[in-house]
Image (cartoon, rainbow, N blue to C red; front, side, top):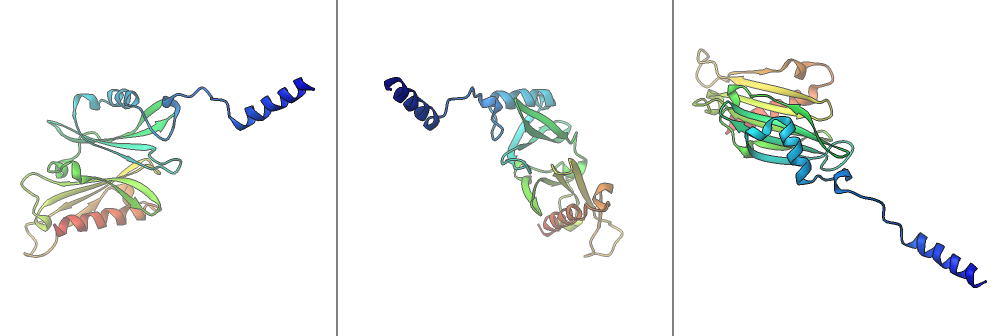
Length: 197
């Protein structure tokens, strides 16, 4: 009887105090370690550039699942998006060198924005010596982790137009495809903000 009571007490204790599972911070999907970040940065090719900003943002699966890294080199600005996976981070998207209409930017121009329920990466800028709002050469980028695509808007002032008139906004081809209207609208809104500066 004594052994039966002892066994029952041990079973209750076991149920009330869950066993510690073998756990590693590297397998925890709602965060990342510096080691994982370092490994991902090296694998992405960003390690040879200066990093100006790292922002975390959500995916459909988890909070803080993605990272946007703004880096720069003598050639210009670069954006890399990393996605959290078991055991680390993997490169989801790389911009390569951004076009000249992003040359004059800063770390504050990398933002996490909302397009509907989705968190997206937004970056904007202007060309050197052409940052005069409506008289300039401006660029806006939106990266969507849902579609795994970047959408662009480029604004160019036309000197041949009458004074006070606006220039032309050109969108990347994918922004005009059916189903992506919300990204085109977000690009237009971001461009309007730049033109009002």
